[in-house]
Length: 245
Image (cartoon, rainbow, N blue to C red; front, side):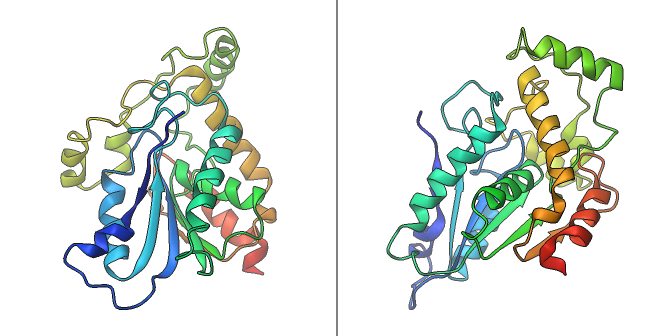
């Protein structure tokens, strides 16, 4: 399967003359449904212009990567794909001996934490922006409907049947950002596929039980009015993570 991996070191060649080796390497893991060539690119170019090496990838089925659009058959396999591609980036002679950090937003935050749990000694730290350690109750369907959908997912995993509010409206208070989102034509904007929703739900439930197993240095940023990912669990992560002791 062909996956898209973006490398913003090359952006230093346009308008900037690099005089020294790169600073630490940042690898960016993105939000659900999004692509590394849209909102993330602004952050990546800003870091790259300051001399940092920055890498990001589109998950299978998202952005410009191959796979059924918006379909996550296995979150664990998705994490393995992220590890494989970022490990190759870190093997680059220019990056091999540099500190490396994970940067994850929303679902990307969950991916970053899962990567850390599978590679506990491979990363020097993580920056988490509204990490998806728990899906907010405002977004989840009622409990009974959730159980019905979980059952149907075993028969029709690829169907777009999960009811969903407008995530852009919930996630962005900035009207300009909401307007820009309309131009992101390769983002997944349909109802979640059943198996994708099950994988996200199971992942967040698993993470919520393992917060004390996180021991890499963390910078966590989470708005208290977030209605998509639950900020109370980010606070719990800060309090329970071994790195905060």
